[in-house]
Amino acid sequence: MDPRLSHLGQRMSRLSGVRAINKDIAETLQKEGSHWIDLGAGNPVILSEVEAMWRRYTQELMAEPEFGQVLCRYGVSQGYGPLIEAVVDYFNREYGWGITRRNVLITPGSQSFYFFAVNVFCGPDADGQRRPLLLPLSPDYTGYGGILIEESDLKATPPTIEKQGSHTFKYRPDLERLQVDEQVGAILFSRPCNPTGNVITDEEVAQIVQRAAAADVPVIIDSAYAIPFPHLTYVPMGLTWADNVIHCFSLSKAGLPGERVGIAIGPEHLLQPVECFQANASIHSSQLGQAIAARAIRSRELAKLSEQVIRPHYWQKMERLQVAFGREFPDDLPWFLHRAEGALFAWLWLPELPISDRELYQRLKQKGVVVVPGSPFFPGIDPSWPHQYQCVRISLTATLEQIEQGVTILSQVVEQAHARTPLRV
Image (cartoon, rainbow, N blue to C red; front, side, top):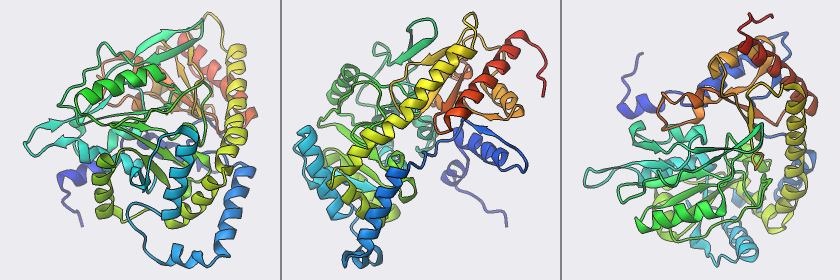
């Protein structure tokens, strides 16, 4: 049977952004007899201390009478009550936000929240006016390219590029070019950023939020790598509370990606329509994941392990990667690593690369190394901008030895590309 797909069906049945690359990566890594250095993975490392915490809380839950209610009964669309209470208590104690239960919404992972929220606020309104989703800085999370019903409803502002030393740079939102008016449906950005690790400063966030508030535009901040969990931040950063801001936290990088638990915190008037959308689409998130998360947040153990175990694990790898680049890449070759500010990735910019990012990806595969091409991480950007084809994402989920070996091979392949010599396999 060859089903006739609706317009929406055609849009949602296509792999968007880096997911098409991930399919090729998965097939590559499954090849028998191959030994790959995987610097492309987005799956977090299973850390023994973190796994032990989730195992212990699961065992405790299974031994309690509450287990049957959690696993064998439907819940409410807003989320599991004890988790919501734990979130309210934690954020009020740590940040003084003064939130209530109505300021929290639990979703099946943060990706589903973005899909629900963006399509609540963006797209054609009741008057037929199209209200786009605005990314104030691109590159950003590739998944944003697939969450809108209409792809044309995504707009992005190119960043300014600030070089910091001979081989370091940083993206900054170009606030002079950023246009925020009443026609914008919502603003969305990740902080820290996947793929670059960039952290938009507190001052820049404040300016974006103020402009959006003046136009009655909600601002959604993807806090999947932020404080307090998983605390994958390497520079100081604060969390902004405002009447037009929604923070969405995720437990995926805190060791619980399989349970799909997203925590949205924001004003009730913004969360309530998203909660209704969720009720229609998926009823509610997994209650098992919510129940063990409630214990981990209430005990403060999740925040403690995030700061003392998760963050140091990836920071050690980031430091080792930077040293390897300084050792393996020649000074006279144009290369820049994005300033290490957060997340679990490094972002490499090769401004004079004579081949595309996808060709570099293919050449590295021939040498047994997998990275992720950078171009899928520029949703909403004019495809003629050369910069987006000069970047690659490098994951910090590999071992220290694999990271060093991968950087060595990467430098060799890049030097060969600059010398325009045939690749030797």
